[in-house]
Image 1 (tube, rainbow, N blue to C red):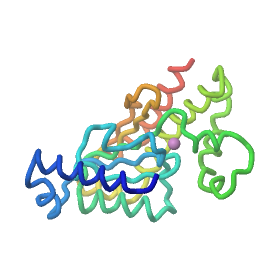
Image 2: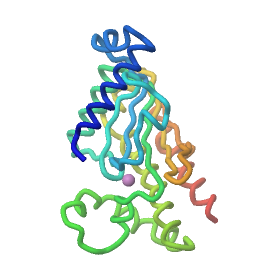
Image 3: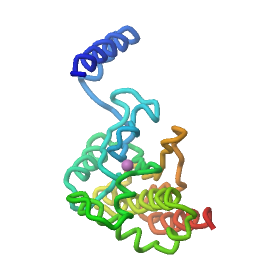
Length: 217
Ligand code: CO
């Protein structure tokens, strides 16, 4: 199959959207005003807008394999900087998903190429929590536990970044949330970590980690 169908889909979508709101594209072409930044996995089964029912212009999106936030990743940090400093989003959702292939790859110890470097921090995280992961009844659960741990870790890393810290220091309203999406049921779950100020970072991170561990005890 070529791309014909995609262009046909696009024309239909543009037409339907215009029928619903004749000024939709005209208005959006002048500005975007999203209140949310979504940092999620590249996995094709985790489409940000669809999952949370938002239209064009309503969510700023960054996706990479295993939804990682790294202090050396200019791509992710440029997105965060623009979202926070210019768009002034009020909520950042770091969204992992169960059964994540990237997280799974970080857990198995064989050479997968370049991706091993990208996923290195997830491997380190897995080693740090080895007893907790090994107490899982099977591989699927083990991966899912690491998917959750990974989200909590990324929330903490993001909150330690200067872009977020500076926003909080100047009093800008901004909350960072950790969520996880279920491929099997299409449901998004709040992982119980919401951080809205510098003072909350350490305590909320620890509480959420403790709650996660408790849930599987
Ligand atoms: Co994934």
